[in-house]
Image 1 (spheres, rainbow, N blue to C red):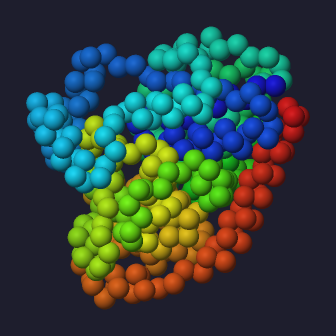
Image 2 (image 1 turned 135 degrees about the vertical axis):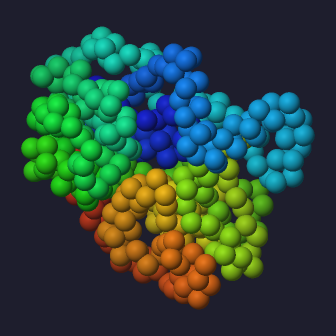
Length: 386
């Protein structure tokens, strides 16, 4: 038996590669042969150029990043010296590729949706899609069949493990798209989603049996992640500031000014060509005293590592992505750890969050029960293949 997986793990994103790492570990209980489908839709040079121009015009932070990249191209040596002083690992996207090659078995790179049909299956094989926002509307406008496994034969088991719709409702989908999504979802043997709102969306498309399950990264324990985490060489107390810079969020300056400890800011991997390895990234979370972040997986690892945190709410056109955090925080009764557009300047509110203790025992009990539900789901979905 072979299990194929399909998600976003070939993008330059920490959460994406760690999702696949966790999924590989978990699915290994059902089959020793886990293959990650390397689907990277291609774009022509003109499409790439137009897409970048559009992003730069609609988001000043992205435009600034492009300018910085151009300047850095002519000042590599100076950049290296500056980053060494800031204790950053000097690397590029090859760090993530090295991680993928070390831990994942992959197919040849597939760039066209129609070429997915060239993958050959044995009758006992299965395909698992998820997690991450693979069912987002923007993505599906170009590859509506790819991430809904329309290319997988009828006789092969199809399982959705906690994919995200990236939204809280079905507004914006036209009638034709809704019909296609309904037909695609009907072919799955089992459907689960990462956000509570996703259950309702699946029901809109005819799947009222969808389960709300944890992101794959939460199926592993802190001890499991500790097996690959690399602790920073400087272990003096610090606050970790991990902010995805081009996702507009409330300002963290007031939050960070409340701490006496030093602050370590991790650059987002798409912000500049320098970032820690995934193992080092995990180590920064594992060793932090406190975390300030607007990242979904940032919060996931705060929960796993028992790190007190502040979530800085996304704003402007990124607001709809808050739903994934509302779902996660709500599950563990942690909504009061969030700073909003109304409260990010409120020093008293920030101090209350910093000083409020988190009932980790209660959270661990909830997470353990949720993990058991996820294992039961996978057992039922894949038991005929085991």
